[in-house]
Image (cartoon, rainbow, N blue to C red):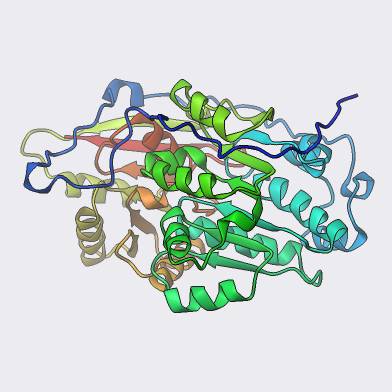
Length: 405
């Protein structure tokens, strides 16, 4: 029988000389900045899909048989959940006991419930006497986590607040004064609120780092380090990542104390459920015409297109709309309200194409995306993995194409 280690006070979690190599800086270099060049070998972006028999995970118990409060179980049932997913089933008691967790899991594996369910249960047993923080890389994912929390905690007297860029700082300050049980946010906005002395990180005892690899890709390592160093009351950390490579292991070991590790996915390769290919653009060729010809085919029902810059995202979407293809955009210059509306139109099939920068590679929970198209080759393989992972989900075959100039 597994034993649960007792909680113990931990240090800040980072040594002073921690370094992460091969990560792009968010700071520009003025006029000396050179054009980024992709490190990807195009030939590695060609792969036949391998249709697999869907293996349905069969849990050994239902939520009724798990140590959960009746009201929390009722909320799970109201959402249509009767049985836990693998990561929920295998981690619940350990997390309730205060164990740290490294979860290698993609969207769709139930990882949000894997950390929210035990945290909610801990609140119910302690009369809400602690605060928890969930850090995510994108605004969209922050709102998804908050929506999930609100449905799971309905009627339980627990409150949450999300803090993301593109929203009113004044409203954020008012929300923090209400002392929410769960704080959800993106690193930049959270650090801004901490620097204003409005977010008291020293009061946080539970920390969740969701889509950790993506946060590193986006250059948030410094913000994460500063936040963790300020969390002097932290006694439990849960870290979720779709990919884990050897360059991250030292950092993860500094964040987590004797963690249990659960893998629901390989943590490295792209999905076997995705047909991958490249499209070479001949010298002097019209790339947009080639794109338009592709998505004009009937099988291109719901298409997510990635471009490297906000300018190119806007340009491609404008050209699509002018050509009669219903399209919208998501990137960092769009307001939060605009991004939410664009996603909603995409989900409901009001538009055929959503064009985005890497900000949309994670945090988008849209079912039945038939195709992912990289209008420009991604800078690195991690970015590529996250992008194409938006298709080929729930046992369905997906297709991903990358244009090579």
